Every structure is written in C-alpha cells, then in structure tokens.
Image (cartoon, rainbow, N blue to C red; front, side, top):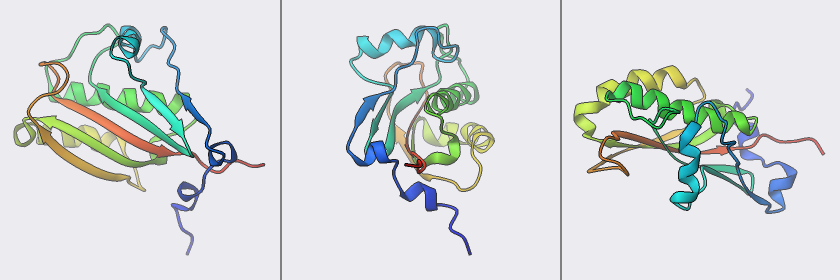
Length: 157
C-alpha cells in the first residue's frame, strides 16, 4: 500500500540547506489588495519559508478593499482564500498543508457557520487541525483567524 503522505515528509534540497525566505505578496495582488500595507505597519510577514516548510501567519477574513464582512461564513471564506493565495504563490495547494490552527471569537456560537466553509476548502489527506476559542482577535470586527504550516514537495536535483 502506498503512503499518500510520503512527499510531505521530505524536504526540497534548497530548504534542507536551511535557506529561509519571506513570501512576497505584490501590492497589486487581487486577494490581498490594500492589506499588503499591513505587513510593514504591523512588522510581520504573511508567510516565511524555512527548512522545507512554509509557515503562514494568521489569515483573517478581510476583503481586498480592506473591509471586513459581517458574517462568520464570509470572513471564513476570505480567510481561506488568503491562505490558498499564499500557497498558490509558492506553487503549493491545500493538500500540502500539514497543520492548521483556527482561532474563533464566540467559538460555540460561530462554529456551525465555519464548518461548511472549511469543508469546501479541504480535501483528503486532511492536515492536523487545532480549533481554539479566543476572546478577541486583532480587530473587534474579526471573528475568525487561520494560520497554517505547509511542506514543500520533493524537488529533483
């Protein structure tokens, strides 16, 4: 029987050497839009490559124009789209994720709205997932934040 996670356990040659790098998101990016300016303002990177892994900072449900949707469903969808966009920029997909952590304001009240959105964005093999209820996120309008770790597939050479 073949192991569907085999590629997830090995690292590309450039990462095995310890190279580290920031994933640059262009200011013209259709998914991130105006929020790209927040990286410098808040002194963080949306994602960092290190030792065969891609560490993705918490993605929140902000539209490209900087507005925050009211519903948990829409915020969750935008957060997943941001996560997918970072993966796309790196030539990866949701199936390359090995860990996902989601933070929820009003966890019990909002989980039923979050789960169908999550189900639309994930396919087998599923990553490890941790769900955490929190009092607040970075802005009072935000209800969901998702951070993740992906692994790069093996590269030839």
